[in-house]
Amino acid sequence: MFNSIKADYYRLFRSVGFWGVQAFCIFGILLAIFTSKVVSSDNGIFFAIDVVSYNSGMLFIACNVMTSLLLGVDLNDKLYHNNLTTGKTRTQYYFSKALVIGSLLPMQFILLYILGIVIEFVRTGGNMGTLPANFWGQFAILFVMQVICTYAWYCITSFVLYLTRNYSVVFITYIMTYILLGLPSQMVDANNE
Image (tube, rainbow, N blue to C red; front, side):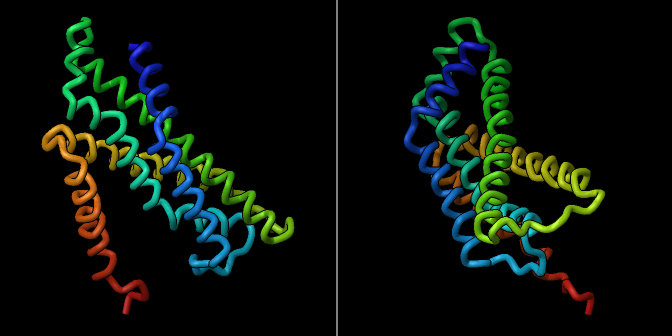
C-alpha cells in the first residue's frame, strides 16, 4: 500500500493539472487581496483569513481536479485492476487514494493561509494588528472545519466518479451541489428582518 501511495504522489506532482490548480488557487488569493473583494472592517491577519475563507470554493474545484487526476484515470482506463491483481484489496486501493487526498488537503489550506498572510503583510507594510487571546483556538476550529468540508467534497467527487466514470459529470455535480447548498442561505435574511 505504501508503494501505491508513493506512486500516487509521484504521479500527482508530475502532472501539469496539479500545478495548474495550484497556480489557479494562488492567483485567486492574489486577486482577492489586491481587489479587496472581501467586505471586512478588519485589516491585517483577519482580512487575510477572510480572503482565504472566501475563496475556499476554489479549493473545492482543486479537490475535484486532484480527485479526477488520482482516481478518475484509474477508473476510466480500468488501471485499478492492475492493483487488484497484485494482491491489493479494493479497500486498500480506495484507502490509499483517500490517504493521499486527506494528506494533501491540510497542506493546501496551510499553503493558502501562509500565502494570504504574507501577501497581506506586504500589502499593509507590516501593519497586521494584534491577535485576541482566543485567536488560535478559533483558527484551529475554522481550519479543521474547512478541511472536513473539503474532504466531504472529495467523497462526493469519488462517489460520482465511481458511478459515472465521467469527468464532466463530476464538475456538473459540483456546480449543481454548490448552488443547491447555497439556496438556504439565500432564502434566510441575514439581518433577521
